[in-house]
Length: 304
Ligand code: 13P
Ligand code: SF4
Image 1 (cartoon, rainbow, N blue to C red):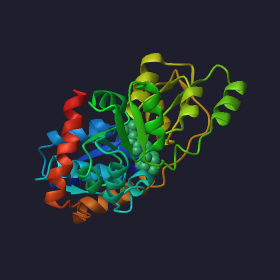
Image 2: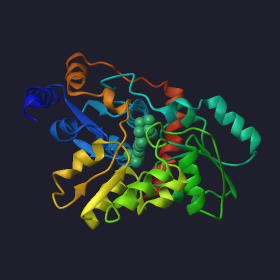
Image 3: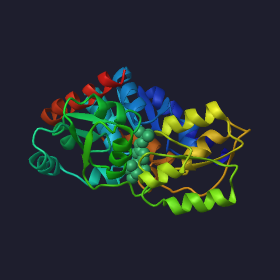
Image 4: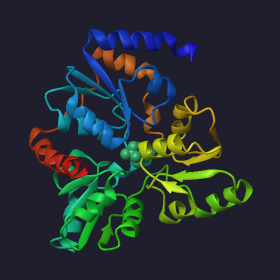
């Protein structure tokens, strides 16, 4: 950590000078997560926190859709992202035209879009969801058929948990979580039967079924913190275990993990540059933002 100290000091000083706060996702590297963030959380927590920011500038340490969500929910703030190329395979998998196609295929069915989407897609949707409230949101829809976009695996996991609904989905997937197979989990468990295995619901449903628990990134942190298993494998992005291992010395984190190349575009150097230069600013067309805000706020209201 010592080699990061000059950056951490400089960023924390510049934050004060520039009246900025850093909202950081649970997948940020430990030096960002512990060293410079003001708020950490999963997508839902970061969206809710964005509504409460009083400082003039939000530096979003996460991926682009998260920065857009902050701008949509708190439009008078300047929202910066340290690297515009921090995208997401799910957000890239669908456009507003894709939403229109789904509506044409399933007339009258509401569209529940994962927050891992662009502002245009949110604006074309009826409501958003995150991995922590997807089942709750789908269950609350009045229609028997519910369209979920763009994560086919989150949708299939929700379909199993909400059997009273016919869930139909778009065929997007997360490049980090789609890599896991049920065979990987079964093989690992055969060799390490004493390890608690926990998956993110962006994993395919047979992977989730082979695990002991599944939840959003903050749901995973809460489960490990509450249960303190002697050994845990987190079937998700690598920084998760790194970020919580110091606070949980009684838990041995083991097993393979996958890196999100988009999340890893955010570095201390780029955060410092972003604060110093006021770049790169995330702009959302106000008409699109107004419609997208309806979908995100409906989700927040239903999750309370
Ligand atoms: P969470 O909402 O669980 O933090 O998930 C966001 C994400 O991008 C996971 O891949
Ligand atoms: Fe997108 Fe997957 Fe990366 Fe999350 S982990 S930001 S869903 S690509």
